[in-house]
Image 1 (tube, rainbow, N blue to C red):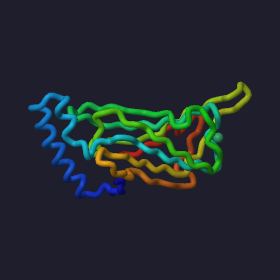
Image 2 (image 1 turned 180 degrees about the vertical axis):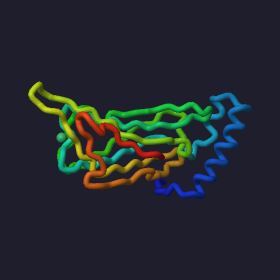
Image 3 (image 1 turned 45 degrees about the vertical axis):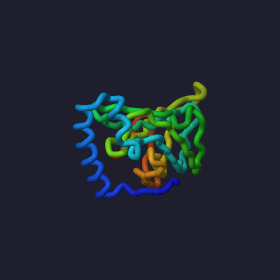
Image 4 (image 1 turned 90 degrees about the vertical axis):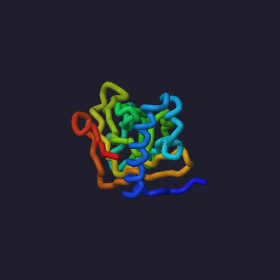
Length: 173
Ligand SMILES: [Ca+2]
């Protein structure tokens, strides 16, 4: 069964306790055994839904989503996905991309989420591309089958990416 859970203060506190216990477990268990402990809070996939405003994401431009997280040993990693793969996202369109998470990512250890824009040219005569992002929703699917909305922001635009400036948007998780 799939349900929606909000990330409240109680669950954060509970998770902090869990992580503290987990840190002890890492010392006494081999990494392979430790990974299985928090299956219910393991991030299985990231789902990103982005609304484009009145300035499109042009063909040949790239929008990449990056998810920074901490592993149980305290090291930081980033997993990323190219959202549009060089295809156009037209004005006032909404696109959803799902990214399967690598192993070892847990809900309480996510650090931040960002979108990196790179302007492209599909022919030598095109000028640099700009892109208005009007909304972004980030949902994670957890190991217990539930979906958790971590980010839901909107504006007009929420962020304007330019070919030569403001090419990164980020929010903490
Ligand atoms: Ca554009």
